[in-house]
Image (cartoon, rainbow, N blue to C red; front, side, top):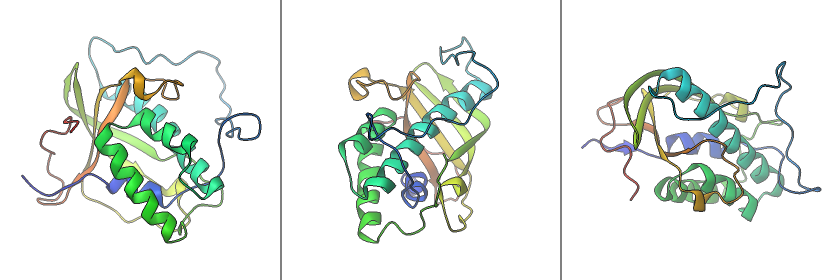
Length: 200
């Protein structure tokens, strides 16, 4: 098995930040205004296609964006920050995120955008789709979160598995999915990851 870069997506995000939080004094900025009031549905369709995965990833990217805004405001690993990560990542991906953020904090959170937005995931294709594992080829744009240019990477992939409700008691993640892989395979570059939905 090639060397799998599990942390690449998180590493790019870890160099981002802004404002946000919980409660009256910690309210996160509202999402950009929309022209419709129709509620977005994340109900799993009979056939999971790229349009559906893109909808899910937009929601997960926003939760992650909120996490980095909390980090940038508090300049510390706080409970609200960790709750947002727990809501969207499996245990393995959560630990990777924590480790990267701790390192980035030690370096002064260099590269934070003055007013960070959410990372943007463009779903190129659904590689495989099962009820317990969805793998999609994607392009990731972290520039909304960064104050410096983001380097290009090999072909990226995102894997989703059903969310465990106990990891998101506050329902920060509006979807029924959690991310078990978000990155790329380094060797051979851009290869499809093996066992991307493994939780351990």
